[in-house]
Length: 565
Image (cartoon, one colour):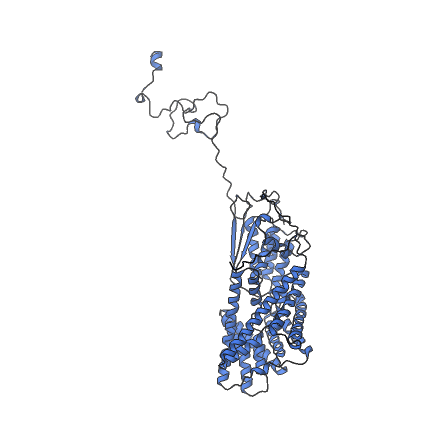
């Protein structure tokens, strides 16, 4: 074959179907390759040291490289630290053109005030985290575990009756103590949610938790507040594992008072309340007996799985039945004071104050749910008492509403009864023994102010109740700041002497005697007194925050007035 013939291009038929094209080089000799082989020019990594290789017509130019595929991260657990999270080297924050106002948060004020101040700021204006609680790894804890711990702490606070704003402040404090500054907690009546975004370009991490059961234990509430305070402290390094261990101990701890002590406290509360409305020693014993019997019946219903509505209905019947029975047997006793004292042990003052506080601070969904719960409890009490009063009136019981209006002329006796009522209320709320004395004194102060304004000064009961409740909220907030704890243990039991038990009873008695208009007027007065208590407590707390140093260059900002639109 001549050279000319060798240079002459061959036709496609003269070539094998499996022979490589001229532009595709293969390793070794001219061996047959698959038609799916990648040409040399399209390889992601160019072979180093290749000399004068023949490339395909689809090869990229010499100065252009194909972008390499991103390396796949090894699959890990949900609790491993994300690659975007670093407690030591946080991503650079965005600075708006107008600048960020300087916010100075001093560390000698309670963490509640600092967290509330930052929660009401836009995310871009919040200062960097002041404290980072570290564990054994300097890179920081795993984000899902921090969010889970935050939700568990918020669950205990919300189930214990804490306000929505205080629960959000505690959740925000826990997240910031572990370096998660771009987090947004959200609290409703039964749902807790929190969202954390590592940076502006990363996907947010969101977690939620449902509160299905609520119980009153202010000792557990104080322990949770102490844990959050330690997490927010610079000098107290609490690792994530240590925080989980302490939280588990808080959940396992038993109530400080046994069941028989709670039943006895319910009786003392009813007896002391009957003395405040003009009762004597016999009335005290009868009211205490009725309240203790109602408490045991409520426990029995709770053990059978009945809802709280029916528990309140059943618990309201024994005091009313004892008062009606004493009237039917013609015992010279103030039956109205017996029934009124039993009502004091059932009125949901704690839920009422929390509901109004949530509404005043802007948490309208939670406030609506709490107030609806109070309404259901109140309807249950009304149903139980009204049923007994109706049958008592049909049997000929002569219940005189004016008989309970008499008040003792001995102010020392009334002050002692109000302090005993607050003491019993504190035991029912499962408070710490160290806080019982303070709340008892706070309840005595509340009754002194109310008595001086209403009985001595002849001021309306609604205004007198609001002023006394305001002092309760003010002193309770001051005591909580001194102890770096929640204000509920210092305020809830102290409002016990101010609860509208007599107005509630008079309204129910008038309805049972077919005097609907008078009954509705009296019940409206009871609602006004309850609202005065709740608003007064919240106003006293806000006044204490207003005149004490908040720790910020500017005061705690609230939502602007909407002006009707």
